[in-house]
Image 1: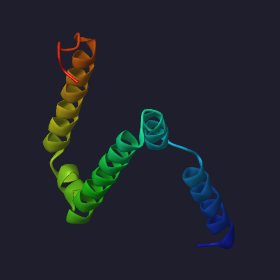
Image 2: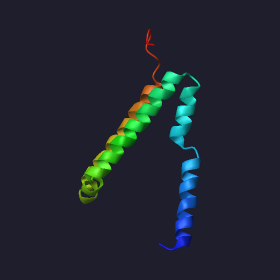
Image 3: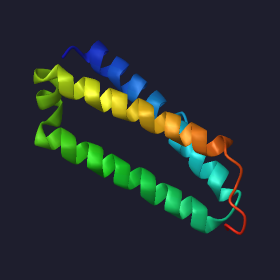
Image 4: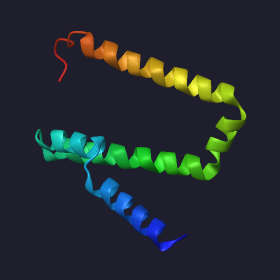
Length: 98
């Protein structure tokens, strides 16, 4: 790799690392409510990253690329889950729930 490509890569990597992303903003929002929530949120983010890294190492991306039906099913399942989460937000809270 030519050196000017390496410098461009390093600049882009530094930008991505330094700019707060949605996970950082989520943890900051939870930290306003308390340390426990921020710690649990951080733990959830880290566990999610570990699962994604493990799936990548296992070659799941190659399987999904080979069988496009699997990718479509995962996309549909993810969309349905987001709809479910949105519907739960619209429902009134259950009486007596903490």
